[in-house]
Amino acid sequence: MAQLDSVITSLLEIEGASGAAIVDIDSGMALAAGGSPGFDLNVAAAGNSNVVRAKLRTIADLELQDEIEDILITLKGQYHLINVLKGAGNTGLLIYLVLNRSTANLALARHKLRSVATTVSV
Image 1 (cartoon, rainbow, N blue to C red):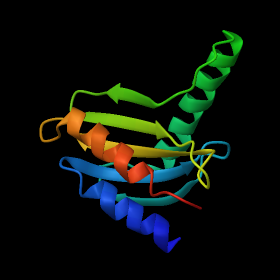
Image 2: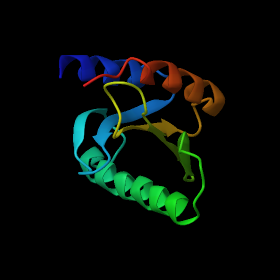
Image 3: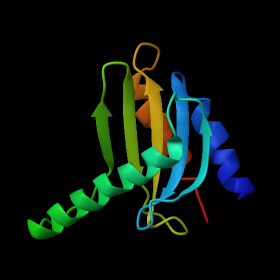
């Protein structure tokens, strides 16, 4: 778990980041979480795993030969980025990143999130 804590630290270094979690998609359990986004990250982790599972079912129902990269949820004061991991050692996981909308650069945050995602291994 020390490796996952290091990933959380790297995610929170992204400008505007206020919270981050690494989540098991099937169970909704946060394997690691950090930051202070102003709400319970464990509850958000479970809810966002439901979003990913619903989208995966929809892709299957539509018989699309595609996969999720990111899901972006925009709120008035925050961006919520969900990145579905697909590499060796991290399949079935997602990264959930909460950004302050007024201080974050969304394009740069997505770029850095993808870079950090390559380091996740369980």
